[in-house]
Image 1 (cartoon, one colour):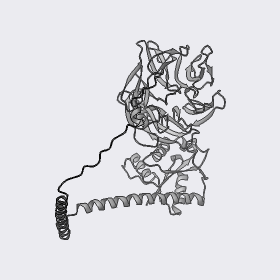
Image 2 (cartoon, helix red, strand yellow; image 1 turned 180 degrees about the vertical axis):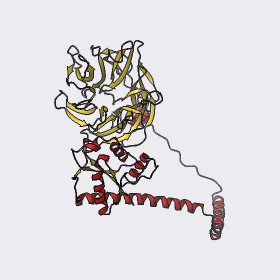
Image 3 (cartoon, rainbow, N blue to C red; image 1 turned 120 degrees about the horizontal axis):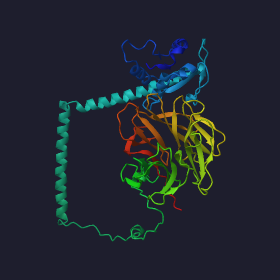
Image 4 (cartoon, rainbow, N blue to C red; image 1 turned 45 degrees about the horizontal axis):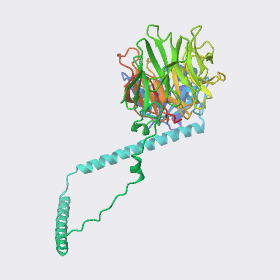
Length: 510
């Protein structure tokens, strides 16, 4: 029988025990790590195994458990695409976590004597649904094994006899067919009438093949057949590698160098909304790490290099507004504190406007699809980085993601409904790729493997993510690698070596 897994802080052990007793009194099987791990057993694999086998998970929320790394790890295992457990938050003390804010919480006191009937009913429903799913899966496996076994059973004597009889009848019918065919041929003097020949008239499709193509003045853009099947854009990505900018097809083929400068490094490319230009960070090689950088743009074919800023500072992460009239970026100016700046592109004589202007470090801005908001990563209000949102004029700052870990590099789907970001989920020096709604609800872990997986960007149709991975601290050195990941869940696919991938939108026809 399946069980209910309880995730809790050891500091709340008395309440966890009380909750277990009340659940068991209702006929529910409960699993806790207090007594049910055998001596000398590997405790973390055992915990993961029992989460995978659970019908649901109860998370006891309190200030103690909110600070617990292991509670967070247990939740991540439950949310893993291979598990997808129903989570029931129980609020013991403090406030409901933003981490589980999209789920209905049950409030209980330390001296609780009876559980709410609707809480018990929901747990039993989850257990019943899990049992049905596992039973159905087991039955299908049994049927499959039975069919395979039947196929391997040697034929009996009756089966051989039946097969022999069928063979005799088939030979007899074949003989009759041959005789009948010979008789018909004799009556027709063995002359076969050829089918009438048809004359094919050329259609408009054939004529279209010889039509003269309309010349275009825009730079040629490679649009492979793959683009109609994946991503909803042109099927082309931009990325940086070793201080140079490249284009490639989404399957990693057709690599093309579009920018290289022996005296400077280029990185963090981002497409203009019409898909014709690329903005990027450029910094001199002799300067300290991006300490003297500025923002530049370039055409898709590598022509028309243009410098947009002259700050000569710690600048990075450019992002276009949806209408293409503004460019936001982060810059460390003055005191060196990193701020979110906005530049009006039709009048570069005017200085960029500082939207944030506070003591916190503000990084990696991204515009919402309607242009009303800018999402960014910031250290406010704590030492860790969270995802915030503000109005395009810098007002209305609102926290979107805060899970106690560092959260970086937000990106938004083209329809504005989904948010992707990178998070250092487990203090193991690695980062995972997460998605949520644009308001921070329904958080879901898509991928983690202990490496630093970062800079996720949506495909134009919102069905895929690109990201790049680098080794975490203590891991063997390896080149940065770009991967493609389905938003619906699944394993990532290697695309090409590089960093900061960006998916080209459909090019404008204007």
